[in-house]
Length: 383
Image 1 (cartoon, one colour):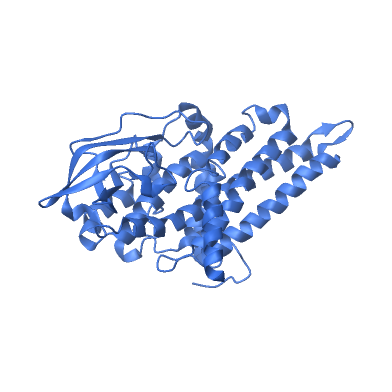
Image 2: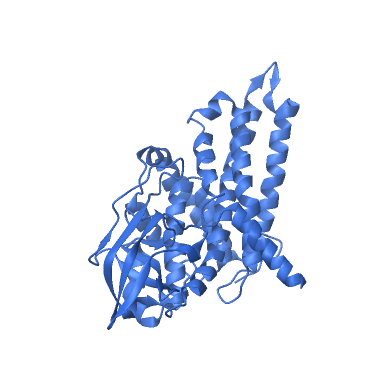
């Protein structure tokens, strides 16, 4: 690959080409349908299959296993570009490509990969991850879902909630306790006892669906243990890093798009006999939005370069999401203020981006959890 050392966002020609492909797809395919899907409030499964045709579901999977063979920075590029058009669909993509496919590949064995990878890489099957429960979100150790060994099978009983893609998913990574040890399992929707009875209405990210997974004495083959019994925490923590990084990239995409909208509006709109952009308060909104967006860009792309499946970078990925998530929301809010009443209406799309942006301060770890993790890691390194 030819190096482009001065380009923060596109360090190689391969990264640049990936960005252009995603940008074209976002403009020609995602953008035209985004408002309608937001109003409908459900995932367009056919779009997930089109993304599969582009090879994006396996962005971080080695080429010899059918993936694109790219890195965390490439994953950031995909989420950054797609979120400029439709953050809701991008969240569904993230839940499939990062929370299921990436997690599954790096925790699974060759037999499991042969059985499941072709279907999830193509988008024929949609994946989801079942970790959050009605009474346990950030407090993962508080989960109540259990699995008991019965011969060559495990029987899972529990209830997962607030799960992205649950209503449409064909296969799940489910976390459950085996004699108190968190273990991850591959669970197919077709297994008796699996149901997804509820779909939750929500404030934003409506082009992705949110629901629950009910597991009523679900019998799962022992070969569907992902990794080792008791190894679920390792799988989970490794995958949380790329999840947080790509969520930060989504916030950057929202900020980029909202900054573009407000600058154009301020340049075109006349107020009190002069361009809106000539008013000092408007300049403050634009100037601060630009500075924070550029800071978010520098952070998320520099952290992406240092994030790999075989190395831990919890400090960097927590910092990226802690900083970037509020930036997306703040820039969207600033854009609405600049556009005034027009921003509050849906014509300029800012109200959709503002609704979508809030989720990024909650999902994939709350801001408070990132503050806790960063403090723990810094204190540990200082002692």
